Length: 238
Image 1 (spheres, rainbow, N blue to C red):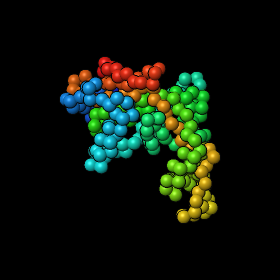
Image 2 (image 1 turned 180 degrees about the horizontal axis):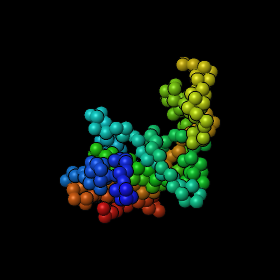
Image 3 (image 1 turned 60 degrees about the vertical axis):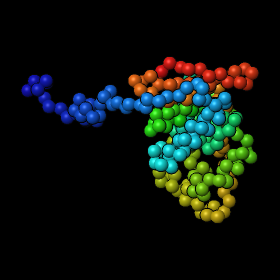
Image 4 (image 1 turned 120 degrees about the vertical axis):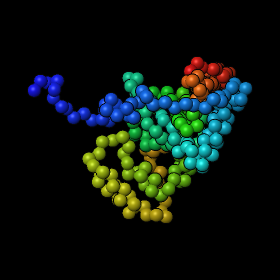
């Protein structure tokens, strides 16, 4: 049998020709016709974020958005090699955006070397994104402790049990650590704040509001910080 006559088994999930439904190039989503205009924006990007976040939360209450406070955090190490992960926004105000993590995690180590960071809120079902660039600083221990006290008991134990981003031998090792902590701090007993766990506040330098528009002519309006503390709004080509 010639080589070109041989029958080979191919994984259809890796070969869209065998199942065109899986071809990403053929996937199309038609976005809404209405967009956003400069005249509709708030004077401060955090006020505009509050408007859109409120709409996303209300959409989530209807089942149209899943975890509206989920955001992709992108960092880079000292050599400029990037990494991304999804975390949950826990606070926002005029100073910026706050999330919490283990300070030994990859993102925390990278932020220690390089404080520049990007956030992305992907509200797909609303054809919206918010994209933030800025700098990260650790929150104070009092602020960290205040938030830690609001976490469910199991999440408090989890912050102790997981050496985040570290290589571990097995799931059993993680479960054993959690079980030991659960015995040490049973439900109803106060769990201390881990010394290597806390928050980061991202002070924005730019905040872009992206609204999907028909014909891929999306609206992109970006706030950029100015030296005097004000903000200018720029329209970006899609």
